[in-house]
Image 1 (cartoon, one colour):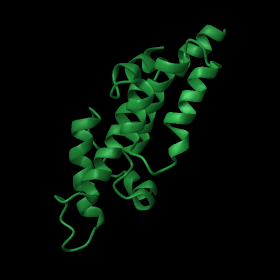
Image 2 (image 1 turned 90 degrees about the vertical axis):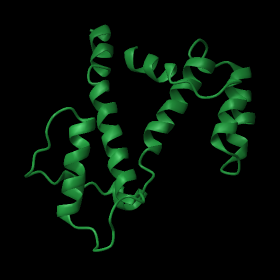
Image 3 (image 1 turned 45 degrees about the horizontal axis):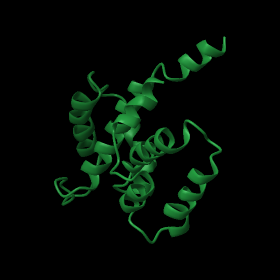
Image 4 (image 1 turned 180 degrees about the horizontal axis):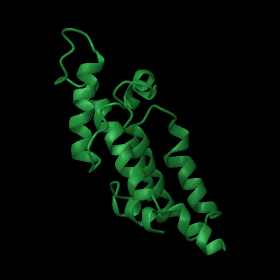
Length: 149
C-alpha cells in the first residue's frame, strides 16, 4: 500500500511540470517587451496569447470559453517572476540529491548549507550560493531524478 501511495505521488508530475512551464511562459510573455501594452491589456489580447502558448506548451488545444488566466492572481502579484517556482524546485532537487538524500541528518552537510546558503539571506547571488554548496553549477539531472523517484 505504501509503495502504491508513493507511486501515485509522481503519477502526474510531468503534466504538472508542463503546466508550470505554461504558466511561466504566459507570465514572461505578458510582462515581456514583445507584448503590445499600447492600448492596455484586455481579454482579447490575453486570450490570443494563451491560445498560442497552450498549443506550444500544453499539447492540446485551448478551450476558447475558458478564461482561467484571468482568475490566476499570481500573474498580478508576481509580475514576470512566476518561473521562480520551477527554478526553486530545481535548486531544491539538486541540493537534496547531492547533499542530503543519503543522510538527511548529516551535521557537516547541514553546517555547509547554513554557511553557503542561509547566512547570506538575500545579499548574495543564488547561483553563486548554489555553486558554493554543490561545488558545481545547477544540474537538471537532479530535477529529472526527482520526477521519476
